[in-house]
Image 1 (cartoon, helix red, strand yellow):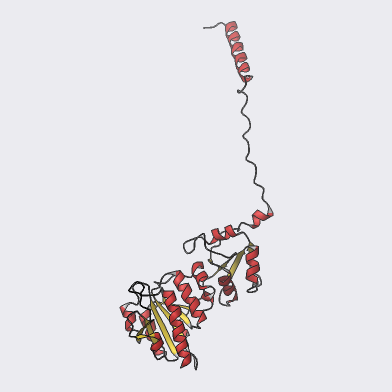
Image 2 (cartoon, rainbow, N blue to C red):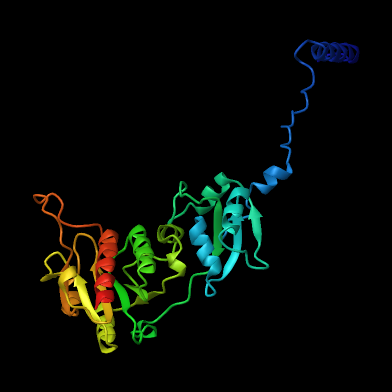
Length: 303
């Protein structure tokens, strides 16, 4: 055991040793952690970032957005746009009074519309509109027009949104009364469908029903003649006699019209196709709809 003087000398020596270590290069006190430089927020970066992800249905493309703004039955919630997109949109329609408008950039718009019914590379054309879905309709809302041709399109389990959108566009061009689909086997309203329709989603009423066959019976009782489009149809579209009220029924690509739906058509007709040696024996359903609508409306106008 050390004597008191020895213990004191030992303590002094240890203190001196610690003191000398502190003065050794590289052994000084830890420097303060460097703070990452704060990102400067500018007016432009704040304007280019949407304040939050829109929770509602998002429509995009200048024609789809303009048609939605012009539709009195469509409720618009907020518009997201680039400056150029807003200029292009206001050349097509005036903005409703009180509609919130958020100026952003193209990348933010692409990010905004990405999701289950759209993809990040969807062509927004610089405008995205948050809306509520349109109200529903009934087939009974569309009786034949007096002294005027009436055409209704019925889709039997056509589920691709691009095809349904394109068919809506053709329906608008050829003056169809409405589009009818089965509720469970049709795409929902979406930005992709609205973009494919190029505004027709807000022009042509879209009726969703539970049972296509029962709806065809209702239309027959209202005075409509029901024509199903099928490759094995007994007549070509340009050769049939048409009345003033017509229902055009189209099936899904591949399987076509279901047997029960066929039974509820008054006749089956086909589009005449050029011989291709069996390589091409059908059209895409949206192309077939456009050709059929042209042939039928031309035939009806000549009678």
